Image (cartoon, rainbow over all chains, first blue to last red; front, side, top):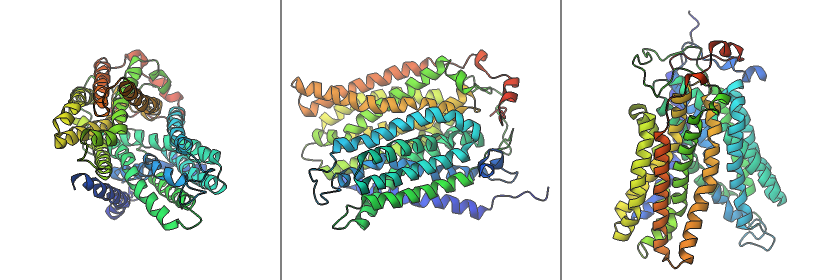
Length: 39
Length: 462
């Protein structure tokens, strides 16, 4: 029972950032392009 | 190597946090979603020899168009044929093979650009990369459904949203890389392919190495399967081969195919349509912005609608897509003629969100109808509907438009009939969805059948 390894919250946060940062960059690039519609 | 990739090796330990699985799935889907942005390479690929402008020996756009088409065909084929293998070997090995194929496809294509041999690009990105696309697309789906029995729609929505988001990363990344590498002797495509191949392989490998499957009979802490069973959510399992013998599979195939046909059809004509309907108001740059806005709603809809389906039910969610969608498609021409651009854009945006939602809600619908045991493989086979719609949608729209223009209809009005026909297609989808009933118990797997399967373990109640 003592060898239960729980997932580190820091590792979880880093892993989510790993996918969220590129996605946010892609979304931001698309929003910048989309703004031309409202210019 | 087989140990590292074996199914037994990736069964999660007791303290494993299931929220590690969605980013593992996204690591793959954010890469393979690049396929939707492949068109950014078309112009530079048509100037590989001439550099500044196309030379006589340069590839024509019609020749280059086959690269994406081949990739989509092989996506469908590999998902259909690889799904059964995925269920046998598990998601890690499948993701690893997908990473090798998708990353390797870029490297073979880079060689094709270097040697100026189009067949190498067809083989690299089209065939090998297409296989990577199909295997990568289906690999995390059943794992996510098993980890999130309480939120199947939301879980698969997160991954499939990543496929939509992948194009948003892939397009600016490709442009940045080509800008960086271009010179007096190169358009920068070969170098961009090399970098992207390595980058995507590494990112997909991270997903493969971090994915875990739940132990047998695992349930989320504090969650118990609902006591009052929804008739449309089975606790039984249908074998992948047996699923093909049920009418439900073909009705769901039509549901996906018709929703995607209508969506692809109008997405392809969105830019030209807004410029012709609002002549003098919408510039080509603004039209490109409109397409960008639609891709945001396509991506957001994948998460929103599949998460909403956890509350509304899968069948009701598709009723919304088909009934509301048909109304909106039919209303678009009126909005265009009235000159109300805000309403026109809003309707189009909601239509695109439902198009994306159709992709992301289908795996949970399949799990509800056929059970979770073989949902990855069944989903793979159903994706042939996507390949079919990918051909049917644009062909239908272009044919209808050309036919009308040849018969004297003004260009700006030629879209109206197309939109009404697409609305009709959605109404057929509505009827197909209406006909979907629970699978007859004669198709359910028996307990002794589970024992015969290597490494198979049913998840009761999920």
